[in-house]
Image (cartoon, rainbow, N blue to C red):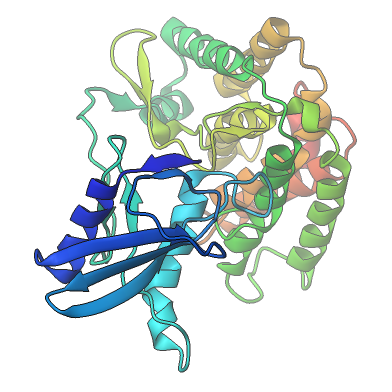
Length: 363
């Protein structure tokens, strides 16, 4: 993003670093020969700016730079670029002979330059939401059965996804990134599997390695379906949905990007209907089975996105390795974990997911 860098804002920032006696002398873009004492027009796009100043009688210079905003290479979001710059600030000075970083900061909406160089962790401030996480409903349905409200809430959640997924964008690198990260990111399939213990009792030797190979194959099958890119939540599971009264709910903790694959949100939620049912009977049965199928039927009716059933496999695999994880769910029996791995491997081995016959995948 290019912006007009005002001299007064730049000078105020430098004074916050070097002291109030600093006087800004001139600026010029690196590679240019003529300095200026005016505002810098169109600063950004990764073009470094040479800044010359003096403090009392001592003159000094520094270089201020941003990262080029571009789609692809993991630089798609401004948070990606912030992550890299924050990392550079913390590490440049640690390597012998490396030019040091003096500070890292950000541009505010009003054009001010604000230092973030002293940060050691970041935080988020949000309002408190009244309600109860959806997983409490699933616990109750597992033990006592469903009410009419449980079916209505499943439709409300499915409707919500149909609504947000209707917003599309044409940006192929973002879709490819979503698929790549689902397989290889530290928070997704490969990262979760790295956290599994060596030789878990519910798996055969080398089973995880074979699963990873199949997931890579799925990445290549899906990476060309870039026209499917849509608005997503990104982590739409029952702990991130809070219901208040009736079918009114609020979603929490949107993760892993504003845009992605609709199947990710669908798998994140519906995997949990399977998960809770399997804990009780090693199958998808009863009201949880009916809710699972209603969720899919309603979504497909609203969106007519039947291709979703051909791309959902790796997203189910991601969610299955999470709920089968000994770290996240240490109290599960080996039988439950084995059933979940049966499901993910059989789904990965199918060209199209049949949501009406989940128990064939659990076998």
